[in-house]
Length: 116
Image 1 (cartoon, rainbow, N blue to C red):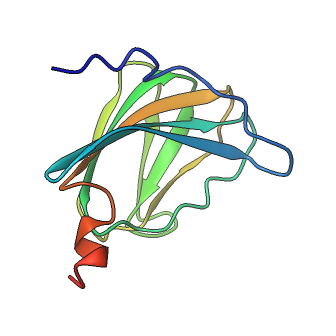
Image 2: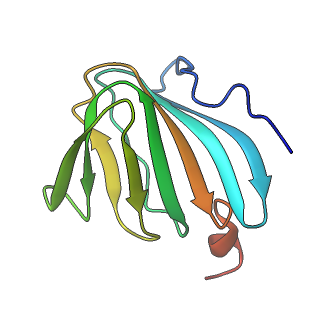
């Protein structure tokens, strides 16, 4: 058993950064981290090769998926979002500092590194 006591806590991004990523756990079939996005920032993430589940713990935004304007949904504390592998997505209109627990299955970049 592992308790991830720092998961879900906002970390102020460093100089010249809008986002901060902190990895907490990585095993072959799963990885977990916290994604912190400053209010007004640009979420410039690229699609991942793994399925993702986001759990919003703080902040408000909209999530765009499938490309600009294709699918959009408001998200805030308590929102749980599933994004399938390879689907373009990003948080937009971030009105308050946002903190998101991210779960990747299998572990982040494991498919990319395996050439899948």
